[in-house]
Length: 188
Image (cartoon, rainbow, N blue to C red):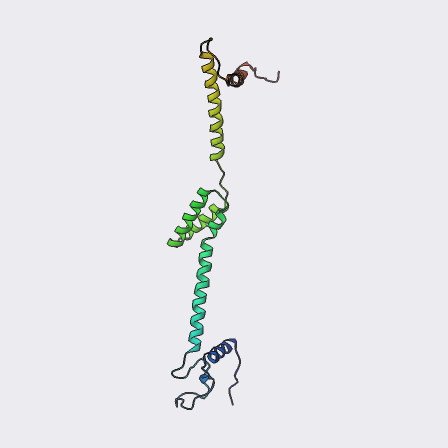
């Protein structure tokens, strides 16, 4: 009974690499085989002094897989930062710090917190507050201008913007006087 040689993908790759490297010696049986060796040696057994092609192929495959898996790992760790790029700068920086902490400490809770923080849009509270503060400052400046105009002596000349300040002051005065003049309506 002769052994049946089945072509396999790995066997074909090994034969291809060995032929490319000029090592066709393992495809043929050598005349100086060890007496304890069997007649048909598997394809991955190399002749003495020859390059182990299977070892080289597996080493290249292993290095490639380590690089691919490492790249995927780093891409996954950068996911919260990519999602947070459309948010505010402060939120992006917090997410980036949490992602780095998760990367270096291997604590997955930081990564989950970074991902959740990146997915949730935090409301912008500083812009409306700044707008309200600016508006209140303008109203206070107008009221101060009106008070200084009323307290000035009658013979002094008015500033060029005095009619605007006076009109704005009257609006402020009317708004403050209106609630006191209103009578509550009880429905009677």
